[in-house]
Amino acid sequence: MSIARSLLEMIAQYAPANGRARVKVVRLRIGELAGVIPESLRFCFEVASEGTVAQGAELQIEHVPVMSRCTDCRCDFEVEQYAFICPNCDSPNVELISGNELDVIELEVEEEGCP
Ligand SMILES: [Zn+2]
Image 1: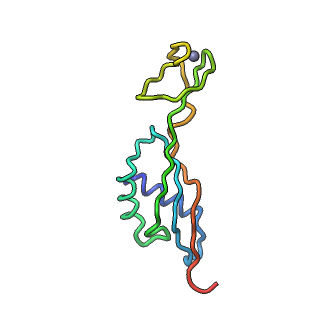
Image 2 (image 1 turned 180 degrees about the vertical axis):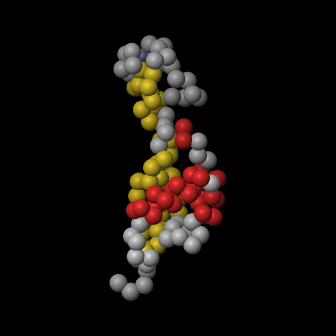
């Protein structure tokens, strides 16, 4: 639920403040490590967005794979099943490049009423 709320806060920052606009689509980028279950986010968002500009908005979720870089051989690789070990040199010295994202990429907004 807290994710849905912070999402609405982000939307409120981007959305036009004139109260006539309505957010139709919210495009999100979510990393696999962010711990977001899309179905549960959709449900919470639906409840939390009631009465806001984003009420009834559709969530379009783009999943970001977990990517790491080996600090020994500088090889980039996709992490599967939380195996943070370099496939090239077996080093455990790896840093996270992506996978923690929870970003709003784009809002599709519809103006309501007279122009
Ligand atoms: Zn390596």
